[in-house]
Length: 118
Length: 116
Image (cartoon, rainbow over all chains, first blue to last red; front, side, top):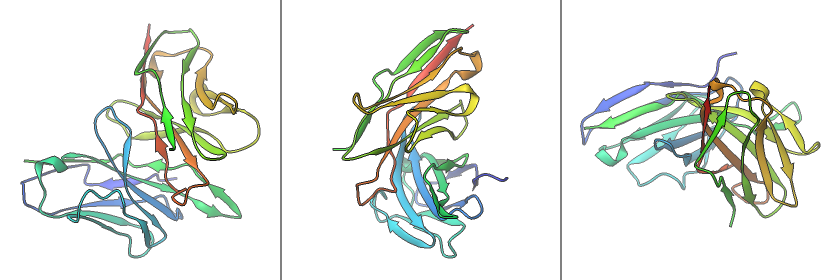
């Protein structure tokens, strides 16, 4: 079946512009995560959704970052007034959660969006 | 505090030899453990997990990992390495006793280089 998809794959934007990064999770997955990953390092947690509810946004660096998942499927990570330090790979992951009486814990990652702020 | 350690930044193995990538963890209670692989310019791929049951778990691409509770370790192994196994490997743990138990705690990663 289709995996997690993210768009755009690459985004170059000028400092001060707003950007919106999209994540389309695996169909039926209730849990959705946003991460930021620096080259050669592990993922850095940004935020977590269970269905449409944003249950943890403690990893968002500041109030320029926001995320939503209004219908419990597709999610958008928005960065307002981008700064050069926002340049990174942004990854989305989804997890099945509780399904059919069994909980699935592993996360499946999308290909990421490489954001470059000039 | 919950943590995951991958003590080796890089592991070099000759093709055909067995490989081991080490991971140790520290959590409050029983851990859920995961290995992920990241090939160059690719996303993170799930390899295998330990939740409960048999301490030896088998995963994708011939990899396996052994959960050792007394040593709080979850080392990744493969009997015979392939050049195509060269990648960055991440160990992660989920602490089910944390309120934020949906989060994975990630190791820093180990670069595996398989030489022909």
